[in-house]
Length: 56
Image (cartoon, rainbow, N blue to C red):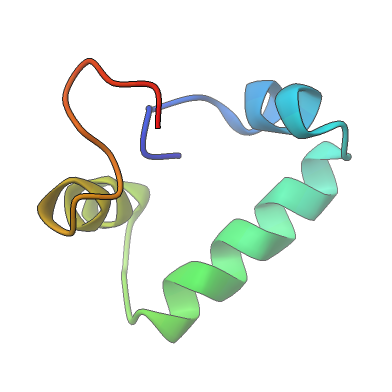
């Protein structure tokens, strides 16, 4: 998600279903009290989990 990949691409890379990706993303966002995917991406950058142009 931090690399702005769509759910289907994340699922393909992780070899899981798209529904599994959606479930995990929604649960993580709820636990972090984030209202949008954009907020999650911003948090990933701010915390250093993702770096601009990097493949973390």
